[in-house]
Image (cartoon, rainbow, N blue to C red; front, side, top):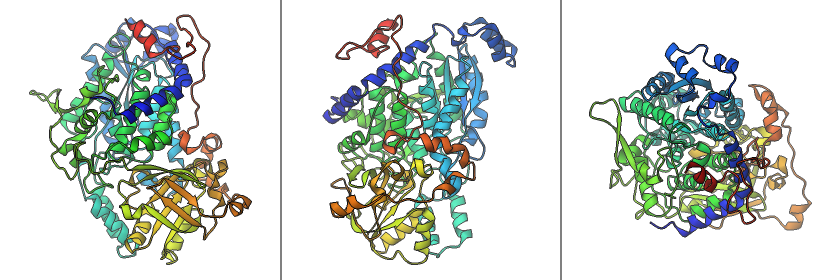
Length: 638
């Protein structure tokens, strides 16, 4: 199937835009590459420290400097339901790699916080920054230079992006990502949302609310709605960093354990001593474009308009919201998973799952097949579903089902739920923002109403509970950007806004904060960039200004006379409480150094060039070959 012309155009633009920084990145990658075991560069004292506590046979293997060593980097903790299953994974991994003549060491743990626990709490102001902290922790785990590849154990919101950013800063090492899988289905997401709305109206007690939440989030595994955590898993599939179909197999099952063992063995097979597939080359411009397409085609989390930008940056690739918007115009919506429908991810997997989606997008010319994945093949090799073998001790893959098992949940590209991806760039004199409209009815996608300005979720909720919001309005919630307070998610607003919309009011939200994959049916222009502390114009809005939010025309405007608008000064607020308590003082350096949302809200920069060294050649004037480029790499492999 020929590649869609828009996919081709966007990819070419990204390649051209990224040429200097991608070239610098690949040069760094090539400079770090070592022939033979990576630990061979260590002095004897270094090496002795590195395996001092290892079992005798594994220690001998490491001494011989012949067999590959696989790092285990884990986000295990037993407070996160999604990560609790990882407790037993290291033993499975170590045993599995021994069977293919390798060794594995637990290289390090990374922090893992739960947005579900911290919603509306001060700790949520650490959430976005935890992504970069996780990347740093992964870097520390790999800094010992003992390892030839790595397996990364992570699932949730900032954790997988953080692990991948860390992995890409060690991009000369192969990387395999290993999920834990979703919890079994509990109370339906639709029933859960209804209880939340009743509670916000004062029609349900706290006990009833807690019981509903407990029935929904009831056991080990990922929350089953299609928020950021499960969007992460979808993207790892589309980027070729999972074994095919691994994302949505529930924990504690024989197939889950068999997939973990197979992933570990694959990590041992793709080292420098075998079929060398470093993650820094797998994650190239086409891989990033595939990830954006996968996100759009499944109605995934808007958080990835930050995270994919940051992941790309770590690999020397530059993308922006124009790329998302242009692709969204041609990528059809193939799934309906809550909050874009009633089904959960278990239902989606049963209907056909990730292999079905990847095949349909490839058949439509909307994914690049000519990429390298951890299988060492094109992406079509991932159009499969895993099953236990006949002896129940290994995995076999079968072609993804030809027809959807439930067309209310999953459809072919020839009969999509929507012809577009449901993610829109809106811009104007208030800045640039993203809107997820896949769950927003068309009649709600345009709102023109007076502004009501708030500086916190708490101020908004106080006004709602006091009955002051029974009107048409656009809530302008500001000072929620990364510099102001770490850009927390604002889920507390969703039930209240949904109730007002259901009551017939025209309402919308405009904010420099985040709403994630659970933003739901209320129109929300989020991630407004730049934020006020970076000079953003959201600080010029006053109560009563008419605000127009229009997903059809891509408009985000304050309808204020130009002379009046420019005569205003940016609003200020006392943000000092944001920096104290619940560990927030430790993150001052993040708030002080973070870049704007559209650039990924990162605390790290694009790769810088390094001097040309022996074995690397300079880029030619038209950029046909850059230091360490893929063309150069293919010649070296041959």
